[in-house]
Length: 380
Image (cartoon, rainbow, N blue to C red):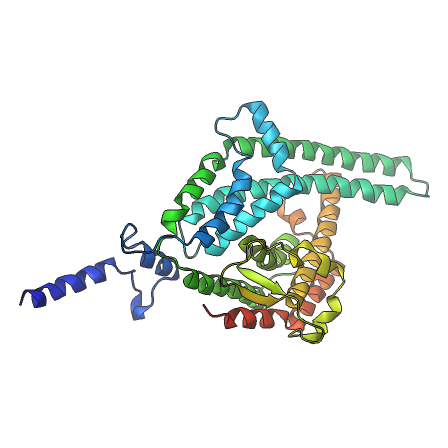
């Protein structure tokens, strides 16, 4: 009799501890995975954190921890800022940011760390933009002046632009140094590292692979089906590139969970893509991630399918750099801030047509569909 009496109590406990359910029985996606494994986070009957998954995060955290020291002096902060402006440092920030983005739907607690990592990465990007704008102007003016007579008025105009861009570069460096000084990463990175084991309890490798593959498919689907205003540079063309770029960057950051297969001649799922072998895209680092720590049960995809993705990211990146350079010079000559929406989104009709053609070529290649198919067919 007492067993029967306890049944409603036990059922009530299960209901109370289960994830919140929407109307119609649907569980909110942000809560679904998180609450299922954090109901009893300290239960002795639960499996410990998977070492492969925890190490995947740790390998991306460790290189950045060394940059941030607690209570650094002003001179030390400037040295840290300079070190972070090196290309390899930004690439490492991208790797960690990629992982945090990939897992944030399953682990909402990662949003805090994603925000602090993204803040520094964005700061590096802003300084790099100032550096690249000045370099673009110097090279552009040099080409313009070679082998021809340039009027004093034009030379004065060029020097005005260069002076403004040098000032913006110097100002951007000061802004970035202040950003590093107030960053919380000196505490956030060690905290993230120390919490991995407890956060990953109850998250097995089989579930991880299913989740990772599903998120990668979602990213590709969003890129394929998303609406992007290609009449705008930053908020349209560059936004499309940003979203697409996360796919190869996430594969790189996973460091072996997704492996790349070199299909024999004629065996690429889309045979026409084999023509990209030996091109700039095939040699790009996004097409050749090290993937140094293959997972025990990885998912393997065809490298040839990655080439058109990387080609699109690279081609639009070069278009973007040129358009941004022209916009920066135009803003400098006009004595306005080049972060104004008019200049941020300034793009010529020719570049708009070129960007649309690049996007169309990717869509027509069927590479995205084939990648989604291969990822979906990888079963835990």
